[in-house]
Amino acid sequence: MILRNSILFIFIIFLFSCKSKSDVDGYTKTKTGIYFKLLQIGEKNKKSKIGDYITCHILYYTGNDSLFFDAIRNIKYTPSPFPGSIQECFSMLSESDSASFFINADNFFNKTINAPLPKFLPPSSYMKVNIKLLTIRSAVQYQKEKQEFLSWVSDLGQYEQLALLNFIEQEQIDVNPSQTGIYRIDISKGTGKQVEKNDTVTVNYEGRFLNGKIFDSTKKRNEPFQFVFGTEMQVIKGLEEAIGRMKQGDHALFIMPSKMAFGENGSSSGAIPAFTSVVFNVEILEVK
Image 1: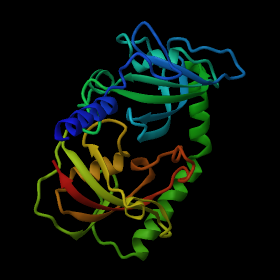
Image 2: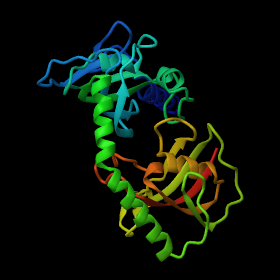
Image 3: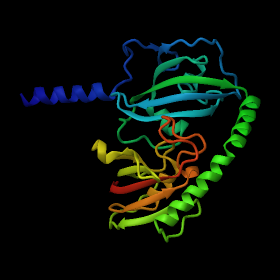
Image 4: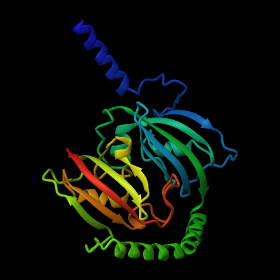
């Protein structure tokens, strides 16, 4: 009985970690090892050219379908640096198409974003990437639209500065901000390990607007967030700076201007508007 259970356990682990099998249901395998399934055919038959800027809604999942990244990104379209890269996924889509892919997780983290493989992804496994290609713009068109947008939102930026200064005054915050404009108010000090690059960090956080309304909370979900510190596209810039100044057991409030939070575009979900300062309550649970 013990032997049979051991064999069953090994088999389950194999299935979980081995999304590299050749019979991923409903997917077609390319010559470079990417699994591909078209989810929606767009109305436009417009393909990207080298140097174009593409706007995509991108979602990353583990091989076991656990979502760990969801964002809209503007990306400059470049040639594929190696066979099976995520750039090949972009090249397979026309404007307004959406598709699902399985790509090699080691290659994506080690070669594409120059980061170690997170511990929640087994070595030599596949990760799922869902992409909806929203728009394709030439470099000239992209720069023109960017300048027009920055001109249009300049007033919003000035309003944000006034709102943030008013909040600091009303809350009688007497600490100095960092060079990037982040205010830190310590709640309690820990005695554990200092966070360093490539550490696996487990945190509880709660994000609020200046009016106190919560927009995100790991505590409410009862699900602490774990990530590899120093890897790209895991947390916003302000949290990257804040967590990098903390150690295990630290608990602090961070007031962040939009340039260190969700910027001139706001969040990809639309929950946080452009040019919005935010407050994060952050507690470091574990540092490995």
